[in-house]
Length: 378
Ligand code: GDP
Ligand code: MN
Image 1 (cartoon, rainbow, N blue to C red):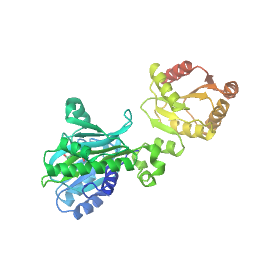
Image 2 (tube, rainbow, N blue to C red):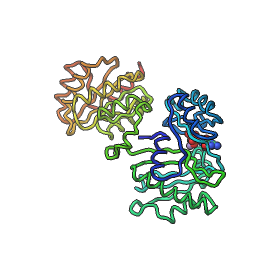
Image 3 (spheres, protein in one colour):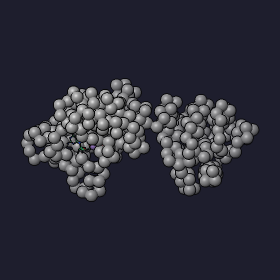
Image 4 (cartoon, helix red, strand yellow):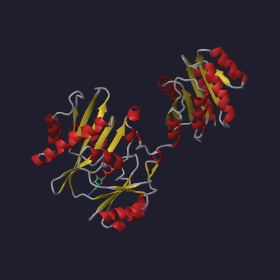
């Protein structure tokens, strides 16, 4: 789960990091009222789960509270990378001397958290990685010992020469590491980490992603979920206990097991199609899950065909077949459905589907080829 900048900053403040004040507004008037609380310039910042807001016009400096209102009225409702801005953060503006990059992320290959820091901050780190990879320094942290003081100093020293700045930055590294670990984060990023003209180190942007599988033990972080900022279908799927990711294609996929879902999507591509989603209905054969899955898939107007690919191990395929028959009775489905079932009780399953007038297959290649053909005809 991705957090908004203002939420990430709350976590950072909680860890003691130097983060400017700020409050969230949903109307231009609120933005003006918040700006009035701060002396001098403010920054109005779009709160969406996307980077590069500055380039897209979603980060604006305001000299007066009136100007903050104007910026807010332009930014609220703006689309950034397909997401509509519904909130802005209003924060006092800093006088920036330098902009650096620092982040902790989970390096799954090394099975350890890893710091990435660069004196070339502010811009896209992907761009730095491509054009000047030596400007990025990496450091793995053994989670048994945590970030050791000399490591924090080493990181800070790659950013600054001034001892005062190094001391402040090394403290920030330690605090960032604690914020990352205590929230079961997969990413905690500050870009830019600035130095002000008066010699202070501050985190003026914040990006934070939390491992979904850890949310159950952190209700205070789970509460940060902003369902308005994520695709509606993903919210519904999560509430129904399904794993669902919306994609750009037109072949709706309904599969049990993440591995089989991946293989199905590969095969859809192999036969020249594009999957409309990743959907794992899980190991159970509960017909309600099939109904929920079909409702979510068919709510996407891009879907031209629905492809079921079910392997019956513990899952009984006759239960799934019954679920499909029940679901199609209760939902009005306008697109063709093709089904492949194999494994436990497949003879009964095929019989149930045949009696209900469905085309059913046992070969994965055949069913995917058929689905792609139907999608391309539509
Ligand atoms: P992003 O574009 O989504 O990464 O948003 P950022 O919060 O990183 O802001 C983008 C850029 O706007 C920064 O790199 C800064 O150059 C500028 N900016 C943001 N906040 C301030 C501020 O308080 N003062 C000044 N002078 N510039 C700022
Ligand atoms: Mn940034």
